[in-house]
Amino acid sequence: MENSISISSLVSDLTCSNCHKSYSLFEEQTYASCCNKPLLVNYHLEEHILQEEIIGQEQSIWRYAAVLPVLDPINQISLGEGSTPLFNLQKLASRYGFNKIYLKDESQNPTGSFKARGLSVAISKAKEFNRSKCIVPTAGNAGGAMAAYCAKAGMEATVVMPVKTPSIFKEECRLYGANLILVDGLINDCAKKVAELNRDHDFFDVSTLKEPYRIEGKKTMGYEIAEQLNWKLPDIIIYPAGGGTGLIGIWKAFKEMKKMGWITGKLPKMFAVQSSKCAPIAEAIKDSKNWQTNFIPSATIANGLAVPFPFGMDLMLQVLKESEGAVCMIDDSEIIIGLKEIAKTEGLIISPEGAATWKALNQLCLKGIVKQSENILLLNTGTGYKYFENL
Ligand SMILES: Cc1ncc(COP(=O)(O)O)c(C=O)c1O
Image (spheres, rainbow, N blue to C red):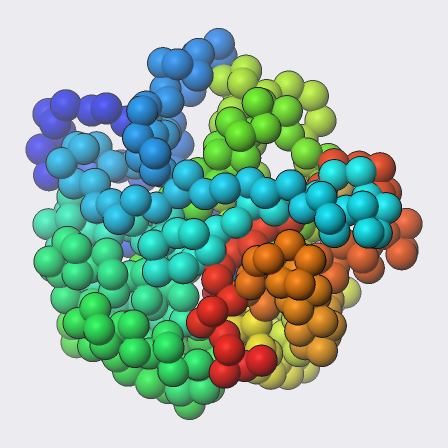
């Protein structure tokens, strides 16, 4: 790649999230760092850069192109992702005595989930590196999103998905023209299949956090939340964590905005929600050294939360610690109750992953960890319409 492209992005370099070794942004860095940990993208961010100097006019994630890693705007592959609504769940809040509950509704993204944000940026980078074949292991939503963005970019998509995923996730991949490979197991088994296929093929592998770009797309949720709330962040954010890109990305956005002076004061406490059937974060907090040895995960109706061995575990734990947050576990039966309650009260059919955040809020209040008087933001990461088979 030429170093002389006109750069609209403020991107500076990449660093290993463990030892902070710097990597060039002009070389393709699709695999983990020297320490086998995620690579993170850095920007030339100065104090006192005004919002007007950075934020564009687009009603999509690309309004934040200056803090995204795509160098030449010609490479942006967009389906209109981002700029999702922030609902005020007034009825639910007053029924249960809360001051304010916001819901960032990511179901309105292309392909029905927040995965569109990350895949838009990752596939744009694949284009910037002149790549033509992409691969991803997925619990469902990321596969559909990658297939759609590859279709738009004219690239070949290979999606590796657990066989026990609702059929709509499989059908959408096929409709977008992807090669779909079904695996008996969870996403970690799909990741093994991807590693095997990588040995013989020249894929651009967008496995969660093994490349540095999806998280950059996901971080735009943090920028949007701040902009939509007029740069005054909520006290509490509750996020359904699988691989953790959203959690890590939102926190990264907050720190970037703090550096630029856009937000001040204490950042929100970040809470991760997992299914009781697969809660590796809770296991890692209990026993950081040996948790993987006896951990037996199983499938959940919240498919996106069935990520038994997340590659970004250290970064997730760091976010929870730095923000003074915690992890919650919710049973599938509770998730279904929460999903139905939000549908009947607020007229929104949200994903089981999103519904888990509402039940987690109740749990956190019962334990006295969160107060009803605090300003709370829940993330609905996807549409519930894809999960009817699970319900
Ligand atoms: C709807 C939904 N919510 C949450 C997640 C978890 O996302 P992450 O892996 O970024 O933590 C997924 C992942 O597949 C998902 O599809």
